Length: 128
Figure 1 (cartoon, one colour):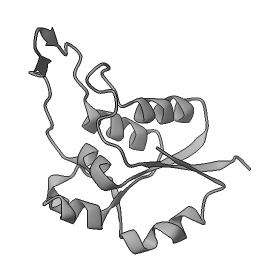
Figure 2 (cartoon, rainbow, N blue to C red):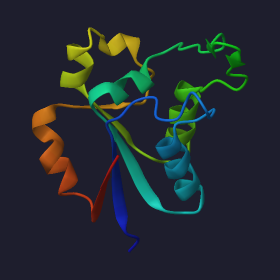
Figure 3 (cartoon, rainbow, N blue to C red):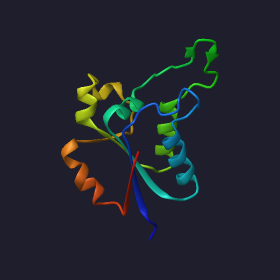
């Protein structure tokens, strides 16, 4: 049986100024595409990745324009379409003033108190 890996993503918008993707979501997508058994848990500020309708197309820092802005909603959807589970910590969602209806469909809600039990279902935990 294939090794089961849970990727806990806690830091949000990692490298999205320089790149068009979050480096960890890109890595997990590549691993999933290569046949790895990987899932994702969004917690802390990374729960914002699941918010519907984010648009960073006007992002600019001084003269530097981000010409390929991140499309995290699409990245998460692609992961789920490829069979990865994407969990979101509901306590962290609420602490950021978000409602469940603010999030894209398909995310699996998980309370903070259930994280340890979820981790027990995986062979390896990669925390980013």
